[in-house]
Amino acid sequence: MTNYSKVNVNGTDRVELHDTLGLTGAEVSVNFMPAGAGVPFVHAHKQNEEIYIILEGRGCMEIDGEKVALEANDFLRVSPEAKRQLFAAADSSIKYLCVQVKSGSLEEYTANDAVMS
Amino acid sequence: MTNYSKVNVNGTDRVELHDTLGLTGAEVSVNFMPAGAGVPFVHAHKQNEEIYIILEGRGCMEIDGEKVALEANDFLRVSPEAKRQLFAAADSSIKYLCVQVKSGSLEEYTANDAVMS
Image 1 (cartoon, rainbow over the protein chains, first blue to last red):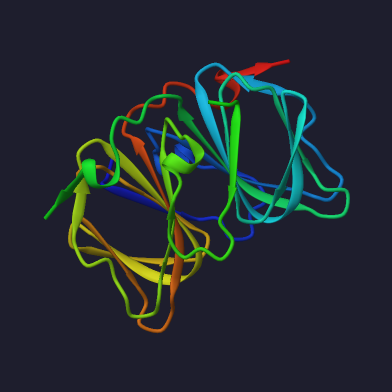
Image 2 (tube, chains in turn green, brown):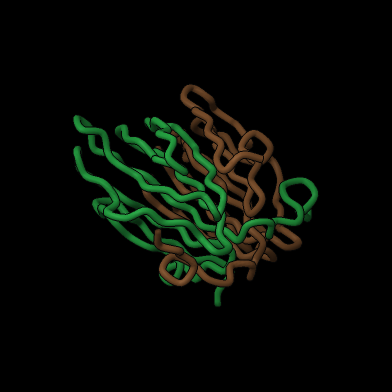
């Protein structure tokens, strides 16, 4: 494993980056759904917190039966046990990132985790 | 803690989302630097893997002395121990996300971690 890895995803509608980048603390995926489409199932997670980052368009996440509207520049945290299903809007596609991380795994960050040279 | 939290960052040049969203497995920040600017220090991390996601513009990450060009749609993994310093290009601003996660913390993901309803 080198000290870094890089990939460009321009023009890709759907890609999972865990293996491509050699990630060890997250899975990151780039996703696109056309207007009127939706993920065809409800799911929850055993361990993982999910962070959805809306890049373009609009949609809706149904979380434990509650509809949460989504638009570009929204950041959404979903707890592992929440039952979720994502839909694009009827009149708008949606492009988004999904970041999966182990719930409770972050011990320190930013200034507390940094080492200055 | 509810089963989800959401924030919109439209119009924000710099924001850290750990506390705002109640994240427990990551810190996620939104960042912007104008053309010609750079992070004014070299840093590494004790525990955390970083994932840089370039949203707009161009720049360069110097990693252990190596210059890595960055442009929109690049995803870059940096190991904790790597000494890094990020710069916008001389003729382009750069807008990016930085995701910090504990290196080695992800145990399972996607199909292996999902629970179907």
